[in-house]
Length: 299
Ligand code: NAD
Picture 1 (cartoon, rainbow, N blue to C red):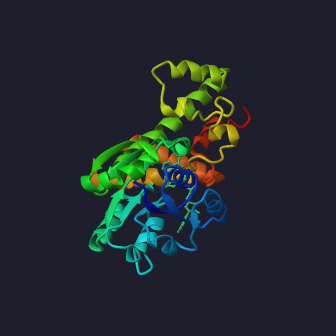
Picture 2 (spheres, helix red, strand yellow):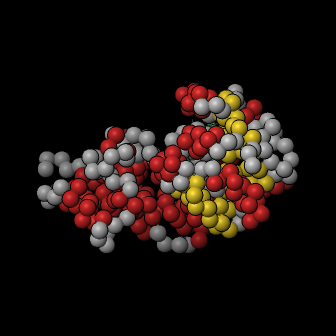
């Protein structure tokens, strides 16, 4: 089955996800604030819309991939929100990483308007987005997930039903808190080895076959030159921004406060990325936390 899909937000993740939906045989109307992002999709055969409101006219399905809660609420809610423009029965698949409460607010407004909505944040990085192998963590009714499954399979491989509206976001926040901690810890360990004379490639090989192995080390190594095709080997460009990781660790902190849950390592990681962002690294890939931890003035 092919659908007419409106895709909003064509950044590092949304761009390749939209390209894969085209390849899967769907027709697309797309919108982003960036003209360059629109051109890439237009060249690949998508219809380029002048606004989000225009993009969703006639859409069976909306997929959105925006930075944060406020962008998502701005897109869907309020007088200009696209919930007012969608035809009854349309399906919303919201893939950004946002607060569970924001996902629930959009779901409530959508349901009132006769629309179906899922929160479906993703994991797998830009590599997974390009390869179409993303993991989806879905919140919302099981029967809506079944309707969305053919669309999700055009962009990803592993689809998990986390629970009710918002549960996909809660799962994603737990995962990304762990990722933030693992990246900082991996960078710290590699910097320690290098400060004591080890070659980071040799140390990465050793730890990759030892008990310290993890995704940040093996798939997304933070030390320039250890791996090809990762942000650390292209000046920490592309990938997953420090400010997006900082946002996710802030969402984890909010979730922790609401539930009186202790997250000592998550809070420490949040402070490290905040220091790094404050020093001017906000737009770099989050693996650049290695630079903060390996900087040794006068060494
Ligand atoms: P990005 O900054 O590369 O892309 C965001 C895009 O949204 C940009 O192209 C921007 O122009 C566009 N945009 C912003 N406001 C808009 C609006 N009002 N209307 C239309 N377009 C608008 O971000 P990204 O890395 O693609 O991440 C998107 C989301 O996915 C974030 O919530 C992020 O946390 C999450 N995520 C990212 C990764 C990753 O590895 N990059 C992995 C998993 C999840």
